[in-house]
Length: 149
Picture 1: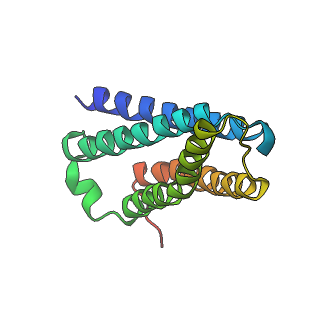
Picture 2: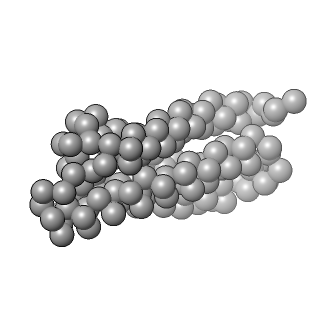
């Protein structure tokens, strides 16, 4: 059971990062060339996979090899979970922009993303990617039984 839960958790993490990378790639085209439809789909995948990551992580914490007792009072676990939640909350800003862009593009096929909004979405995506990069570090520290001083 532990191996299956770990596999699902890691597969969802990699797929979620793949969706976020797809968003980054789609935004690299520039404000005038944004494919709002594909961007919104990648973002929906990112959100769905984040939910699977959270669910599979919770199942690992409760039913996995180490058990809930290992995680319940571990400050590194709480830091790691807090980072994940923070990234999720920060992702709301680009998500709202992507949905707004898709609605505008559907209403008017000639509509273009305003450059300031495009820059803002890219900026928040970079913040998300950097914060996500800290989570594996916390996982490694936690798995070795270390704690923050």
